[in-house]
Amino acid sequence: MPCNKRRWHGKFREYGYRITVGRKEILDVLTNSKGHLSAEEIYLKVHEKHPSVGLTTIYRTLDVLVGIGLLQKFDFGDDRARYEIIDSVNEKGHHHHLICTECKKIIDYKDFIDEESEMLKKTEKFLSEKYKFEIKKHVMEFYGLCSDCKKRL
Amino acid sequence: MPCNKRRWHGKFREYGYRITVGRKEILDVLTNSKGHLSAEEIYLKVHEKHPSVGLTTIYRTLDVLVGIGLLQKFDFGDDRARYEIIDSVNEKGHHHHLICTECKKIIDYKDFIDEESEMLKKTEKFLSEKYKFEIKKHVMEFYGLCSDCKKRL
DNA sequence: TTATAAATGAAAATGGTTTCCATTATCATA
DNA sequence: TATGATAATGGAAACCATTTTCATTTATAA
Image (cartoon, rainbow over all chains, first blue to last red; front, side, top):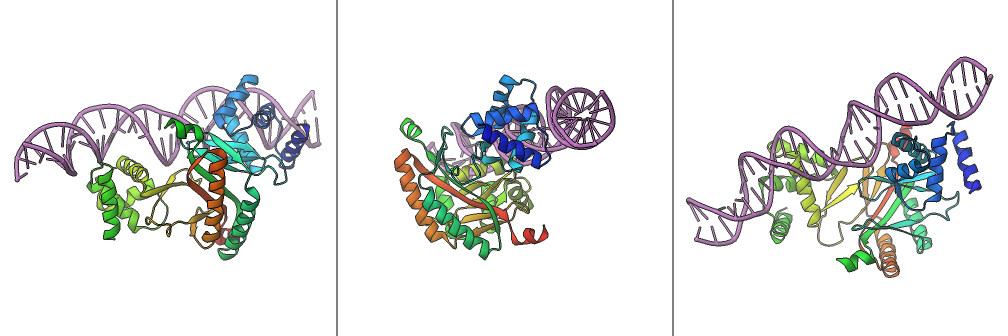
């Protein structure tokens, strides 16, 4: 995805960050592996190609990426942060999550998103007016048992 | 609230837990202080009356309370768990949160809850059917800047 | 090519939470 | 009410994801 690459290249420059081998590889890993990776998982993947990149750099780069809006940080209650590339500038990539509390599996869904988005938009408008709150993001997650774990238990 | 007290007393027995001085005091603190307390905040309050109760017991008791459904555990992104009593058996006490990312203030709201609930119910039904997922709970939170922090920055 | 400031890795520190273990307290039963 | 099985406890140590420190390396503008 040379297009994506150009995007973050630009963003990096825009914010005065330098482009380094480690950062390039981290972005590569993030764009090429779908899912919700933890810092350590990212570290291990990066490590395969570039064993010199340390875990500290992973954490620092992830912070930078979150800061410039290329990455989203999640907490699914398993005691470690999880990260997900923000696909595109538009809203197409936006989705919510179903999280299995047993096996920690995470399902992305956008099926119902239109009606949800509308509801969320209304709610956000209402809340920001009532509480003079500037809403920057929302978190909407469903926790429960996935089909496998339901059977298994 | 002798009524609440009877409720958790019963729950405790039901699950085979013993009633101890520490646990009583922790429940007291939780019911008497509104808010979203962290384990340490609870510890400090408990400590005022019962200095013998240790932080370990706080953590253990909070786990128990969450386990038997008297308490809800939250993560608002400030690196410590926060706890909130589940008011009543009915849905009256259910609410969502607005969280200020600057000063960490948390606002409970239920204003828009009817339409939201309806939407959530529909979404949950849809998702549980499509993904064969048994949804146990949802998290819906809005992050942003409260009125004070908006001014201040 | 060079100067300079940013970025890095390794190791140590941090801090919320959990575990360990010897001691104490609860409560069903006698 | 006394007793004993066993649950609960406190304090210290362990845990572990993340952050900080600091001396060294690297990117990049000039």
